[in-house]
Length: 247
Ligand SMILES: [Zn+2]
Image (cartoon, rainbow, N blue to C red; front, side, top):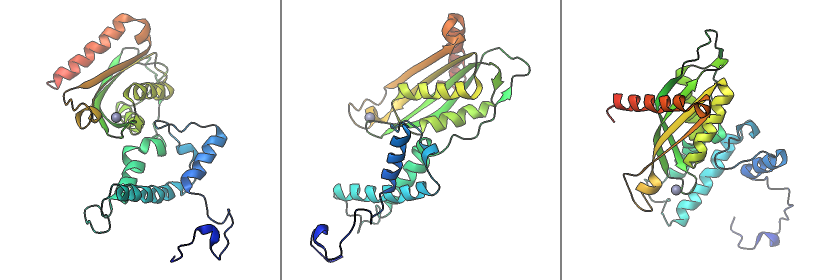
């Protein structure tokens, strides 16, 4: 490793195949071949092979180490940042962006045997994400309104699927749509309404530094969309749930 010659001039000729491709490149090639999108808020768990997530963790840690060096941080002598690269890689792949790399938590649905058709809301569910533009946190609350259809899922499951969907780099508008798609797939409700209120650290910590601003958005589908009184009932129930919390 003391040679200063460019690699093409070393005495040990190397073939293009001798170095294995970085794992991220192998995964990207597989995704492209399968026509599977891999945007920031897509989940790619189905395309990962056994052991690749561990290899990816090593690759990402190496890149974060390079990022820290490029930021002129002395990671070789600074005990505080010595293992930051490994921590950041773990955090991205298994915590804050786990919704990209890990399978959806197992959620069982059951037949709606009692033919329940009254609407109910669940919330607030804490949601945590990061903006796709700067990768800084988005923290908020989510309310879900359901008019049950043929199948039902347990109340706690809404929090689990929301956590999985939001744990990706997002913009809030798309996060809400993706969550709605997943809930529809899980329990095929007759009506679905979702409201998200979130604080964007993109605006609090950087940029305009406007600490009080929050973003509120909603999606209404099925009966909530067709029946204005049902939609009004959902927003009224959310207001009541909020006042219970003293907001
Ligand atoms: Zn941002």
